[in-house]
Length: 387
Image 1 (cartoon, rainbow, N blue to C red):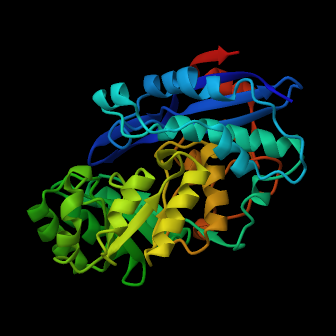
Image 2: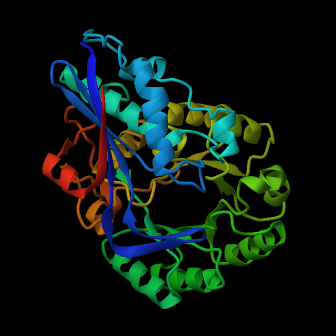
C-alpha cells in the first residue's frame, strides 16, 4: 500500500465570539487540515495551526514545508500491513526533521511544528484506520476521566465575571485567565469573587511582561490564589527564568519558551523545580514530540499541562484527548471547546467537553472522529493536492 496523494485545506471558521490575549485577537480559526489517501482509497486526516509568535510558522510556510519537504519524504514509501504495527513509531521514522534550515531561520521560523503535526496526525489516523484500530491502541488510556479547564480571554472584568459565572454554573472548577494588560489583576479578582476560593485559577501573560513587571504582577496575583503563571517573559527572557522563579511564590508554566526538545533540555538544565511544561499538540509537532517532552519533564521531576491552540476543530481536539488520556499525570487540560467557540465544526462526533468540564474517551477508528467532507469543502479558503 502506498500513498496516492495528499490534499491541504486552509480553513476559515468564524468564532462565536472573538478571543483576545496578550499578543493576538482572533475572530476565526485558520486551521490547516491534511488528508492523506492511499492507492486503495483509504484516507486519514490531520490538523495543524500555525502561530507566527510561537513557532514562527505561517499558513504559507506550513504549506511550503509539506509541499517541499514532508510530502517528498513520504510519497513513495510502502505502508506496512502488519496488524501489530506501532503507528507512532512508523510516523516518526517516515517524517523528516522539523528543524528549520538557514533560510527558514532567516525568515523567523523556530520549528515546523504545525506542518509536522498535521501530517503526523493524518498518518496516525490513516495507519490505524487501515487496520480497523484506534489511535488509542498506540497510546492506551491510563484514565477514564478527563476534566477540562475553562479559559477566559482579555475581556473586561465585568465580562470575565459573567463568563466565569456561566462556566461555574455548568460545573467547571479550573480556569485559565489571560492577563498582561492593564485590567489583568482586576479581571482575576472579578473571577475569583465569582468562583470562590476552592476553584483552581492560573494566569497566562503570553510573554508580554518585562522581568520587573513579571515580579510585580505575579506577586500581586498570587495573593488571590493562582496556581501558576504561564509564559511571563517569552522566549527572549528564557535565560532569566530561574531568577524569576526565585522571586515569585508560584510556579512558571512555559509555552512559547518550550517548542522543541532542545528547548526542553535547556530548561531542565536550569535545575529549577518551579518550572512547568505546556504541551500543545500542534506547537510541539504532533503526539510523538509531545510524548518525548513529557518524558523529559518526568525524568527531571517537572510537571506538565496539556494545552491547546485557539480555534482547534474536533480533529486536533481528538488528538489532544488521546494524549491527555495516556499522560494521565497532567496537571491541567485545555481544549475540546468545539462549537462553544467555533460557529461550525468539520467532524463527528464533536469533541467538546460537557458539564463539569468532563470529556469522554475516543475509541472509534483512527483518531476517533469522522470528517464531514461537505463541511470541510465549504469552510476551505483554499486547497492544494499533491501527487
